[in-house]
Length: 106
Image: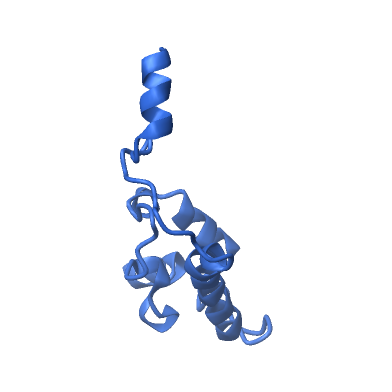
């Protein structure tokens, strides 16, 4: 066991992911810029689309739609770091909500 601990401590490979550790220091705002801001931008666009609550829920992605996405297999394929080109980060006008898709089927 001591040998394994030595390898983990002194190697440049993360024991879980197998990726190499970053050799440079990361700035303090990296997580905010790369994770929080892209998700915030999506939520902000959806808030603009609902026109202060006057728009029908079928027009914009609400909490349930976003929560459903985060639990879907599609979300888990985002990987890490997040892929900014995934459907979730696409412009909301080009994305149909589940309600819009249901209306089309009827």
